[in-house]
Length: 384
Ligand SMILES: [Zn+2]
Image (cartoon, rainbow, N blue to C red):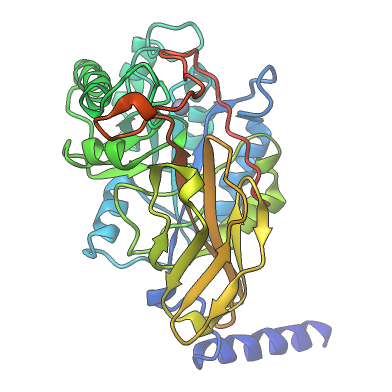
């Protein structure tokens, strides 16, 4: 009897769902969640690693809940509008190419037969002791479920303009020469040119984005913690990092349940800027009436209560003091009344210490990012 009652309630709920009142699986509302992993079972780096036990829990959850774990080629087709986005769609990505990808993660991924995409830090791969060897890569190359992407040669913070590089030409040359070197090394190791790219540290700006976009990639990935809609820019594809405490099942399930907000425009633009000029942060979104509890997030300031102009679809906040951090993520979130899910979109701004004008006498003193800095993963996942 009790079972019958529960089934009845569930049945009634699904009828409501099918009738269109709540329609979370409406094809138009479907989205893609991209998961980002780094190291596996490396207890010396707890903030960038995940235990294999928890990793397997993630994969088991995806399998038991009928998630479609897609290939990056399928994602490309979806963003080109050539393939519908089914409900519960996930792409698995792994950055850098640490040895634990082969020794720890691969046996589990193979067991579940899930495709995955590995971004290679080209200077380190096959060379540094904690990265995969060429024999390990050769073995993975035989598996059609393994996809490869480029993650730069030296893994520097290319999106932060080093003060030593006085003009834009020098800056662009620095990025391009590292990029060309990475592509040559990638071709030698993998046997074809790279089709996918992941910005080191997830950091990007207009200049770097332009270089990657014109280099013939199909997709380029950030680390902005948001899901992907069919309208997402293929060269700024956001991903959720599953590292440290952010990998816990509760958060994993929340990430999977979070849907994207399609932003029509935002101010400021992404990338390098003089942050003292930012007096306001503003988003223009579609279907604003679908959302309640709209909020704006800025890494340095936390959550801010915005002014919402529902007539014009504008959400904005005033910025009273200059943003001081080198990198700030800016996000918008809201609760979608139709689907009953939280929705969000994020992007990145970077403080510019170098003036772009030819007159460099006004150049301000700034911190000089180290060139070829050791590979450290400094991401502070301060959102939620
Ligand atoms: Zn990396």
